[in-house]
Image (tube, rainbow, N blue to C red):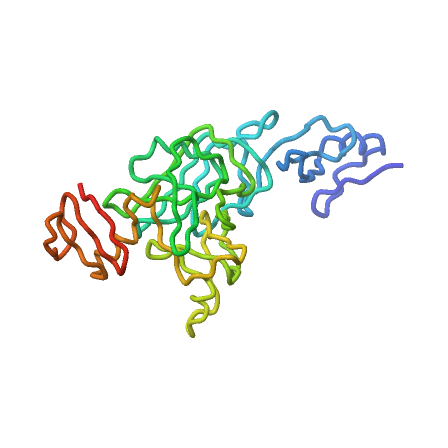
Length: 301
């Protein structure tokens, strides 16, 4: 049997069946995309006898193809830049030769959950905290001074006058999902790599340096639901606690609480010096801050 090969409308030549078979094993390749066991993607030729093998290997990150640095071996990419507007979704675990994340944070306190390990001692612009205790109207935190595993939700405190925080790492292992968080007294931090759906009514979000109960926020006429953005976390309650808002403090009862400082700044507290003289605002040195029936010593350096 002979095959006629045509170019446009002109017959160029006739080929025997065995000649056609020989050509079809080399051209055109029948390329098929498929997902590998490690959740990477690859090109392979389905033509019997084709020796081309895999021509590409890539990851699907946020619905985009990102080529790996090698077609075989451990998964790795050159760089990864995390963006609040996009979040992060990928089925594969891999290494990023360089990864970075930045955020504008106007408030002093926020939440954070990143898919790479944070080396807390490398950053002078912020500190990181986990839950230590949940009291009646107060959340007590303890500082995390070691490395924070990838995907672990934490609270972050900006300790500079600027409004930006920036975190980065090299040769970083990237995880696929948030990990278990710190918990205390029936509360736990729940981390997100992507923006959340509407949060449960008995959960709390951080706003203006305090945790506010979702049900109190949604009770307002102009609030339909409450969500958190990508690379953030919210406080989940088992239903035991049911206060409107909970202030943040660091360490034990005798340390300075951030809500006391906020109250002083907002004129909601009475401030005295060590001699009992009323002050108009916080001053350098020791301040005695009285708010309701609670008195706290605040040291301003």
